[in-house]
Length: 247
Image 1: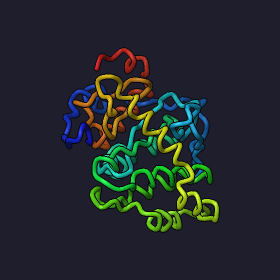
Image 2: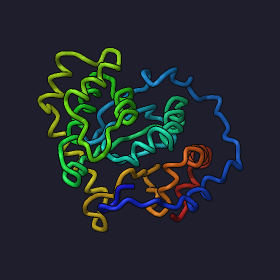
Image 3: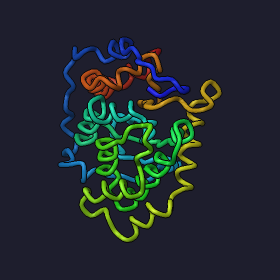
Image 4: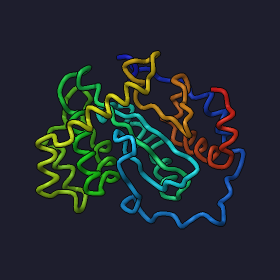
């Protein structure tokens, strides 16, 4: 994870224990509405706080609040081969919703403007109702962290792979940094999330599930798709146990 300028491989043992290692089957409530057919069908909107992007069924029992920086290689690992695919499954079957706070601190730490440009482009994609698809593509084709590869041209090239995203308005928003205020506000929200103990922010990726943060020492669960999927299932089945758990 990217925390305080260091990369650390975290132990997932504590959260694995919470997940129960698949000990219980998760019942499907008969009243649950039909699953979304594809990512394109997922609802997405700007959060009420104005600094986050909300995806999925607002009535889902589980909310996963993710803090990410588009240039963070551990966020890419989460999104492509870690817990991200399991989260997408949970979004589609309505058992979870997601909230994304998009940080851009790596620009200052590593150099360049790629994170800011990517966050701005993601906000522009939300305007077109294409955040989910574009967010997935940005991590699938994430440049090396040190390259500052999220240029206008590259962001527009990726947008061309999302049906219906490219337009005069979208292209202009990317090139002019139309949503620079959102970028700055989202970074400020990320920093506030760290509190006094972590004034520069909690690190990326960080996950807060139903208002309870997975602690840093157990954050390895985010990079283990099986463990993260089991954790989501257990919280959905017995949310009161998650709330009562001391992490």
